[in-house]
Length: 394
Image (cartoon, rainbow, N blue to C red; front, top):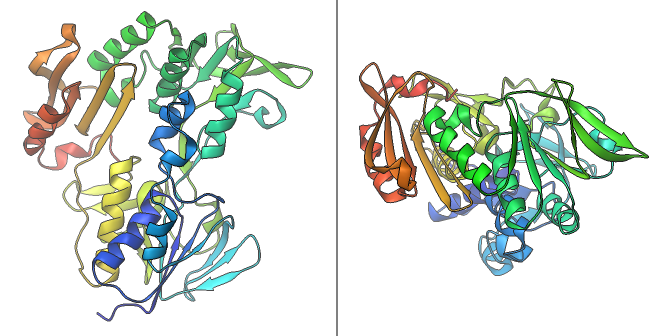
């Protein structure tokens, strides 16, 4: 296979940047263009809900690379110009400013867009947290906030609640699950996480869905639950999860189904690849389509895509993995933790909040969770085998 003369990467966050760096490390000397919707240099997203939101980091510290490091890649970076369409046969991308960028290979790395509540865009005091600008705007409001309600009991919502509580802000966390991250951690660890939040002063209104928001004179005043109760708030963060950012690909002819559907090489069409949160690809080991939303996958999949662009022809078969830091808990999950799994504590003790649990279904290990024991949890990865991992990861 002959290497393409020009690679166009659409998306200038972790997956996009990692694609460019991997191409150069592998010796690719052709033209590279990176198109980013935001005006900022590439930055890391996990710190937004923690170090940046709390003020522990200046915004610049979240940058993935310095300007000198980006220049050394000898790539053209186009910032602040979102992609609006893709001509698949011509491998040409249209942008909001009217540009048309063509290449021999295109990598879609546009990530996610947050879900929203009806009417939230018309109310002051309602925030999302996806971008650096989102984090800075929310931080400004939290510094004078009397009552914060976080809508959403997943990773992002729980991290925001923990960070805000650490800033001294009165916080209520609302969502439909019985405990924060119940669908990702399983009930034992999720229950322990709920205890931790409650001990640190987070009000928990879980097990009931959010119906909408209340407002007065254009400013949010509360969150209305399905039960009819209203949680008073002068600031609300909506963290109801995200969906793949593929609207710009509507009508392109690509298969768009909970992401850009790809083969095992992360290829969506001839010369078109996808990497990171937006990619849903066939995992040959797990035996189905998988889409992973985590920082580690963004980098690893980008490396695999770069190799396949250059002719490696290798399937991408990672073990699912994510982590979250909340208060003094550092939680690492390898594989998947299905709700019907048999759970065994193999190291440490939940009472001491330092342990490793192994999750098994039908006698096969499907997941490993480490609570303040990251090294020990990582050492258990070798136990993860076979298609039993697929539950919950597609």
